[in-house]
Image 1 (tube, rainbow, N blue to C red):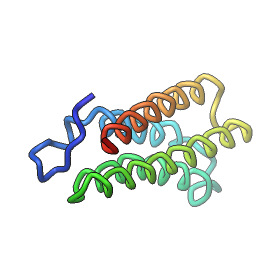
Image 2: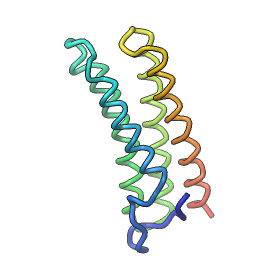
Image 3: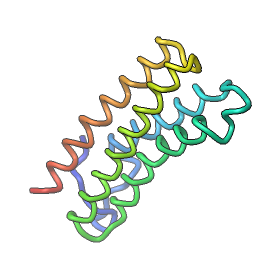
Image 4: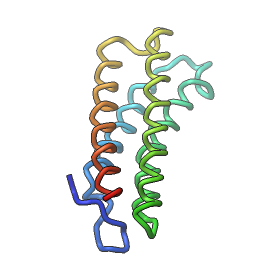
Length: 126
């Protein structure tokens, strides 16, 4: 994983593995939710998409902050959004909107992102 630094220190956000995987996750969630029932257009479909996008967005916002403490706070917010998306994906599966295989694929990404966020936060706190 890339050493956590703020953007002002010259590290590019796009080099951060946690952000890259979070972007992959958001893309996968968008694709997986394309065929949800029409009545979910503004319901669960939109909620899970927003939560997934929020993970990468909060990593990015933290990366752009001026202190490591602020960055670490946004990493925690990203983790909260990740858990929100995870819960919503499980609900999608229960409702029959996602099959078991697709849910497992998306949840595997959440596990990977959580590990990356934990490592990133640990390095920021040093």
